[in-house]
Image (cartoon, rainbow, N blue to C red; front, side, top):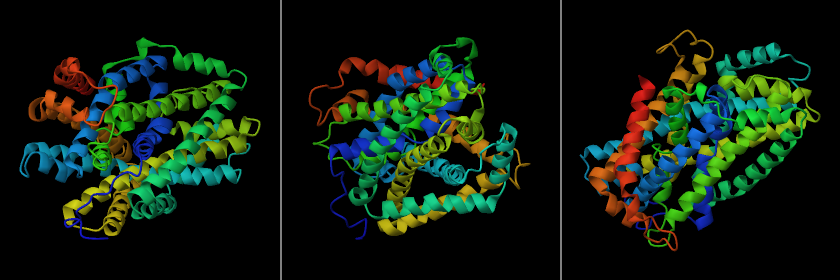
Length: 452
């Protein structure tokens, strides 16, 4: 590949559908299928769901427009793009640095969890959970995650898959990959939800999932919903910025495409709950099982189901697919920014960020075994990184993006920019107060309330 600094033509998406699928693919991942269900389970079911959807509409979609719009305008990655739009020494460039660092931090432990998923796909296929009790399943989980060599070995598998895909380029690698996997993911998810709902006693799970219990909601619950929205959509990770930079400014309908992206993401999160909660209620399992929900609870349920092995294989394959579509976005984002910052070709930057991410995953991997005694604010290293990146860094990044619109970009200019290329529905100037006041204030209040 040619020198990034001398390239006259930036790569672009092969089609509008390609951008929607890729952006939705990045958004749809473990955040929807692993993180969202256990947060719902710990925070009052339907009440958390309602708060989450409200945040998505009021804050999530507008901030996706902000980040993707900045990328489209700059035609560059987050760091170099903000340097173009402001100046190299501007404090606003910190938004790009924070986004890239957050993305790197999250991707590091994401690799570890993807390793768990690959391992559990193998375990379910081999019948490891046949006839085991919940305590025995917990023992299998604890013994596996405590073995750093085994976990690292499994984590290398997704790292290699993602690197080989992204090395092929934007159209031939990233775009083709997600256009193949996204329809497969949605079809499998719908099929599993139908099967889950057919189980005896499953409707108790549906009622619990959809019935709001606001007594379970606290300031921290709302902060977690906000962090989950940003985690799922990918706001503050520099990914929307990078993906937006591959759009043709005059020929892309960002207003409509953004709604498609966020709608697909929210739909998958919602349907994931319709797969998991009916199943766990059908077998009288507590819904608030925490982060171990799909690794501790579900394998024992699969064993009790008719055709449970097939269901289990499909479920873990589904989660692997979702994780890979997100993982591609992480590697694409990190590699694009590394390429621009360090004057590297695509191949070198992809392998560099992949190897660095795997190395950074090691502390999280060790924290489940040999380093489990190391505590940061009462949390092991992995739990701390997940909490700090998801509930602090993403929220701070989103707040800075909202302030950038108000103080640097100016709301009118932002609206004009996002409406470029839009046919039909446009963002009206009447929403200026939402961008200028509501979004930054709501983010700041939720953030302060949640951490106090």
